[in-house]
Image (tube, rainbow, N blue to C red; front, side, top):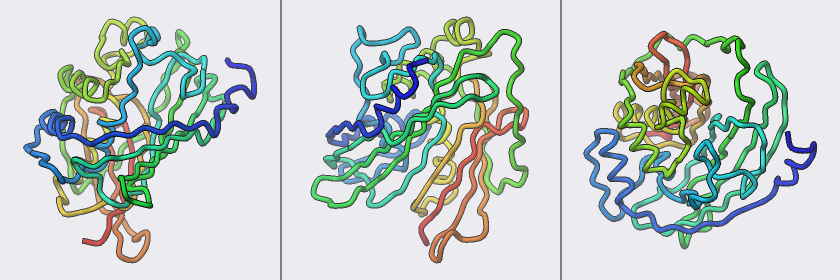
Length: 291
């Protein structure tokens, strides 16, 4: 572990990036998700598709053995070997549109070192604010939760699974395959080898297969919502990863409206993903603006 207190020195560090939102990444993700969106100039990006932009462009010489950028740049130099996307929270304002020039200001908001059943843990929260050129208020505020953990110990029991809800109003079943994971890794310039290098994922990190990206599962959940309620717009969204999903195994995407309304003029929808055994992979909730 890094010396106590050293990681918290990263709190408050910030990074500012600018990008013009071009159509090609959005069209490529639409094709990857088997959609026919054309994304002409001025078209609104669906929620979470901003992850196609502001990509970390680490040089090849700056990558670690897991395919991630080596620790200690913008993110703190956590020594624990496993890094995963734990969850996120979002507040949506104006839509981000193809052709927009957008400024993203990223700030390390919190670093916490903890001990869990699996050993040492470090949680890092990064706040991203995306603001369109000419606007005073952000179009999107995101809190990105990252967890670092120890490698699993030999013979250690797997964490207990939570059962997914059984009252879905909408449901879609798909089986993620190597092509889907490769294409999403390429679109997000994600070099993490657990998503495309089967030998590394199984022999080095001990997974039973290729790991489905947490952000991809979250994107698929909102894609389900978009298919079922195409006119709905989001005010807020949050998700939490509960356990990994793997290629070649069914992933069930589901959702159901819930009560009460968070506030007048809004609606609450619970979304979740489950594996082929009914175990909860991800849970989420979306607050919708009134139609």
